[in-house]
Image (cartoon, rainbow, N blue to C red; front, side, top):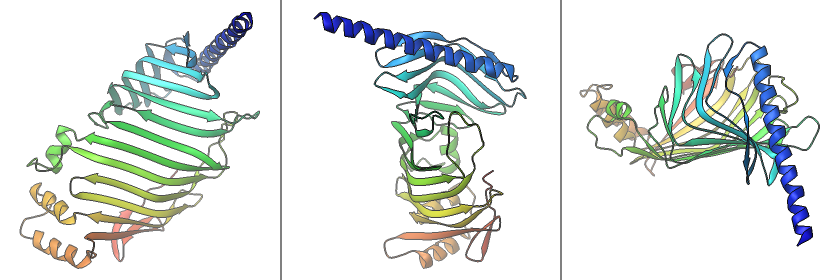
Length: 318
């Protein structure tokens, strides 16, 4: 029994020192940002939890030097996970607002948790990044009125290369969005699922001890799927990105329920009713036996196209 008591005292000491160290680290980070011109209100306090050695800050507000970015929250917790001390966990709880000053996003309900795991090396290389949330809601520039579950993971599989997995379940459409794409309310009020499996490659590894900017060199989509009623979208493809951020490659979209999309576009007035039969005829000629419509989008020279049909400028990844 005495040995157990001694062991408990030692563990409690290590746990307390860990929380103290994280709190000092958070305080130093906030002060460094203030030195760089950030306006920050809020100071960390030690928070003791069986699962986390860390600190809480709240209320907290931060504004970037030029004022283009801002964030506010009532409660932000930062700490090392007790059973995985190389993993830094951050949780932001509602209400909270974050993003560009002219297009902020507000977390109105629930909480979002981020985990960052580093390797046991002097430069603290980033090995894993995770985001997760259950039954949270967003408003503002990105109105999502709740979801059942959100999970995203980026796992390092080579220097600068991360395997990606993500899923979002039961995402309700906002009233404004639903009115604009489904004015008759004939389709589900929520997107059933969104899922992603793929990888991204950067021009070098990430490290907490190195603030060198890293740029994308490749995006690979193994599978991207989303389902809304009888409309389903799947995509796959690979994009190679040059030193200017210009992508080259092909991403193929497979659409099920193309006629439903035409019906919705007709209802909203995006397609005149008198020409809708022409669109259906084109879709019928391009639809495979399984009912899917394949649209390979080619990105080359800063432009996008489907076959010889131009779609406009390609996104730039810089």
